Amino acid sequence: MISLKRTLGIALLISKRGFRAWTSYVSSLLGTLWFLVIFYILGGIRLVPHVLVGAVVASIFGSCIVSSTYDAYYKAIGLKDLFLASPLSSIEFRFGIALGYLIPTFIQTTPYLVLLFILSKPNIYSVLLIALLIIVLWLIAVLIGYILPSTDFMSLGPRIGLVSKILTMIPPIYYPLDILPTYVRPLAYIAPTFNISELMKTVLGIVPFHIGHILKCLASLSIETIIILYLVHNKKE
Image 1 (cartoon, rainbow, N blue to C red):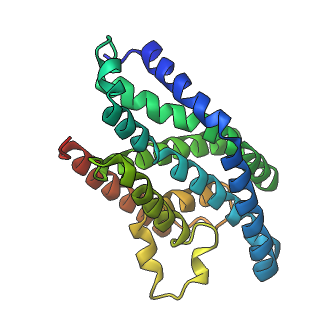
Image 2: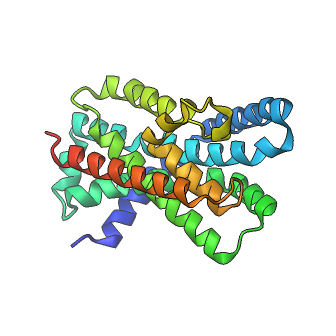
């Protein structure tokens, strides 16, 4: 049985580091502003909501995938064993770290979400669906982070950074899928970040509702999640 109290204790401990790293939030904001300006020049106001969704997805995914680095660091310096010597379980420890990264990151993305809600005027059901998709995004980011080899935590950070950039900068997250050539579009479904961003855009009315497209996103995301869970389950510590 997971103790919510112990998990939140670790989460609050980790989140303090995130709140102190305000420069990373400023850097992220400047990057988003750059995207907004460039895409506005290229495509006008219609691309702005795409950029905002991209900022939400990239911020949450990029920040939460890093939680495995913290776990590897604690393990390398021996503090993880100290934590686990208490009643704290391994799953509580890892879940607490992951939650600790989500808390400050969610606050960071709040301005983007507010702007999206102002532009799309969603109902309560849409807001709940967006919240659910954010949780799914967070879980996938954390699990992907734990798939990567972590025997050398010094090299884990750059590997995670590379994977994060690949999954947030290459797929059509900051821009519409229809910008890509027709023959390239099916490749976008390989990235779970794309499927989540497309579902967000559909919920918010940024892209038209097409049942075939929604089913492709859901099916791809389900298969990707199963594969990720299998890899995590079979990863050797």
